[in-house]
Length: 301
Image 1 (cartoon, rainbow, N blue to C red):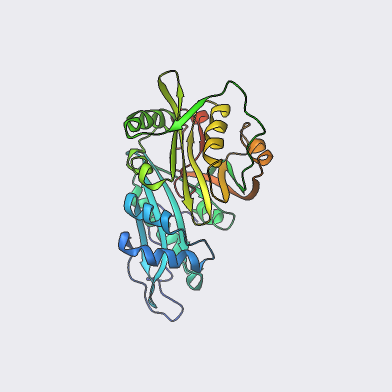
Image 2 (spheres, rainbow, N blue to C red):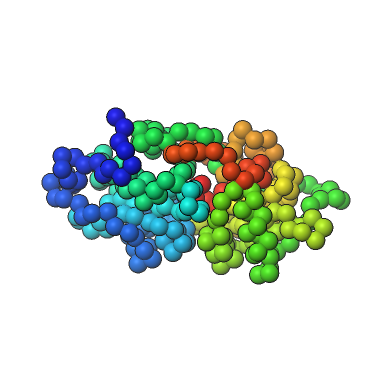
């Protein structure tokens, strides 16, 4: 059964806990909810992801429902990329409140907030049936590779040149990203120098043609976004960032595109999970997807 945008689904007339106590209405979350979001992640067995939650609560739009017994019953994050494209992520329902309609109500609220924008997300196997019922469809696949990065033995004499990004590079980074992504991610990207541990740019002649960031998510270094003119350039950016990483490295890549999956496996990273990338609304390719190699995060498709 399909429901139109903006309809909040309830058991009967209201959403209640198992004791019949009504849940409070969906509300906007902010930086003051960081500890509640971290606790919700832990409740579902996720890594606490404190740094990522802090970033999302400050730079995106988060929504949630307070639990009658304290903390959050559920949460989700909406990130906007201009007027016609957005993403959903971090959709979590506390284990004790599962199967009560909260997840669906929250996603309907997010879609209503998104208006006419196309919304994309990374769906686990557990969440995919709900998203399909809401009208999302799969547009591609994603595989997460994690492991200790092994540098290639030796380096070819001729290779794309990368260097640490400087403040003066941000305008060029935003231009490169918008051309590849096809929408404006500047609000998030302007936070990258402070959020990421390292940010590197790729130069061709005197022009910046790509960039990549590495940021710490608990015990793992996530490399993303990676925007580059071709797979060789993407591998160079990733290798230069991964070579300085502490412990394990994570890459989220499209397994159906050549150039990164096999290389990642050869460099010591192994596939640990798979997701469907899904879209709701008028999905069409934007920008130049061939230049997009990894997302900022699976919370920001």
